[in-house]
Length: 417
Image (cartoon, rainbow, N blue to C red; front, side, top):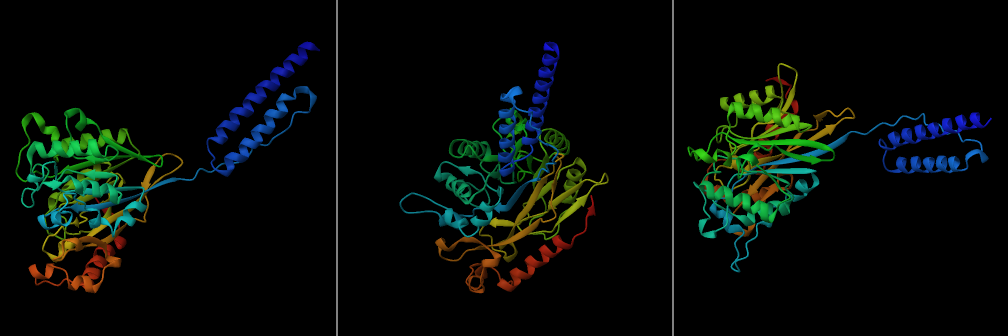
């Protein structure tokens, strides 16, 4: 009898351990209220086990199915943040304290609502205000970087044709600014060492690991020092292919921010199309373009192997004081990434473009970017662009141009890459 009792006790202990293990597995799949319910059940089971043979073993059914909800990340990306001299004046104060928060005040609600927000910082930052400059060799106040962070941006692209405008010093001062003032910000496209360049930037949000790449087509004819090729990510076919391979190994999805194309053209250039083809075939999930300073179409490209890539060819300018009407209409790309229970990540079909308008007039304090949905005919009429251009610039024109771009994006069928 003693031997039988021992065998029975060992059987019960094994059963208790099995139940605990099963409960742990179920608990890992549920959250919130469901977790509380499971914990209560576990408590009751353990109490029953403590009573041993004094009570009958309680039977608890664990035959329920837990469905894990997919996790999602909303991402917003802005185009060229381009500071010409008139825009630099906007944040200057006689007190010596400069501030550019007002430039982004009217759009920051859209930026801050996103899980991740990215912007193309077209120019480098300079620490010495005597080194601040506009076109053609830009040097931008570091306070602009502070304003981008205050507006809600999490990721900064720095690879552009103007990245070497202040040579190595401008790049290193930009890197130092981000490291010292905003170490939480992910900076793309510029690096302080070869080791840093070799490291793929991965941003993890809501359980989704997103690898981010950033390249510029060139540096306005400038050449990086032979021993410092790592300073800027300049497009090279083989380098890009290898980077994408590495990026796919350390992430759930890959996004490429590409500075390329033909300036002021409303259609993608042949060179841009070739680069998009390479990225699609390499397996990049989303590509977002900059550099033309005007908005271009967006669509889904399908590679020969069936891989689908969402591409925005150009978001146009985000902030600038350029003098062509078409450069004052830009867009915020907005898309959603979803991670399914099996670990795969895809972009949802809710991707869109939010039109924005850069407003400036003779009053430096009245220079700011607005959502087109909140822009008025009165603002368009007093815009300083009328001083530089005889072309149409009105609320109706802005709305029609934006509708044209968005219509293409919404009705575009998958095209072969």
